Picture (tube, rainbow, N blue to C red):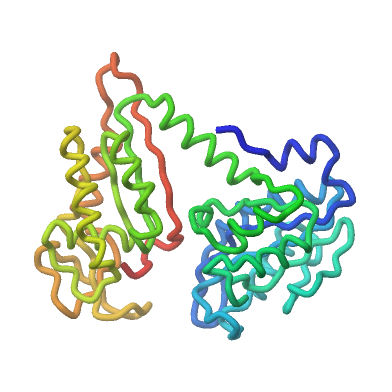
Length: 334
């Protein structure tokens, strides 16, 4: 897939003296005190920011965090902890800017973190006026948020329509290259692992993968919808009951090709989503009405591990897998 890459612009000197707007994915898990418990996504975003700084740009970065109410910034929705951690990682101050739609004061060689973009009214519905305001802030727009690139929101889609230059950051470009290679000229067997909270945001991806892969493993909240599609109980777990028919269609499409969507046979459940909630392993068919599914069980994990580690006959080549996920925590509620 041919895309304009930020690395090429920097190599050509086109970022020098320019205002660069980077949409990153800094949606990291935090404990009840607001401390970051896992910073993989922040560290993964650093190369793009460093590339912009090395290219002589004035750098603006934004991301969503959690699920804030539009128009209302609560303390727990603030990117302040992210700004502190990012500053440590890049070795220079990172200023957190609120109310940034009216303008951002950032100079060449500086980094400004723009407060939680989903607080802006119209972000999730890709409001064109909001997207135009964002595009007016920059000379170059960089999407480096692979985990949210599938969402048609103002900072992931709309801004690219109005920005003077729109391109892919190194993280997004690498994922595009990997998926293109895996799907355009795959070595069999090809396994796709797709996780996340909703089938609806990945339905097109799932339908496309069902036509190409030998096995489709689903996780996160998506797995719960597939459990429902298989006629299994999920208690009070996160799911999209109105999309059970679509999940069944994906399962049917895979079966028609002699492939499968493995359905968990056991799961880890609790009565509440809390750090101190006792967890229990149950057969998937025994999930109670007041259970919350937190993860797959050890039996299912072992089965999947065996399937992923198995090797085909030499004439078939080496097995490959592709992964798409927007759920950072293995213990996220499902």
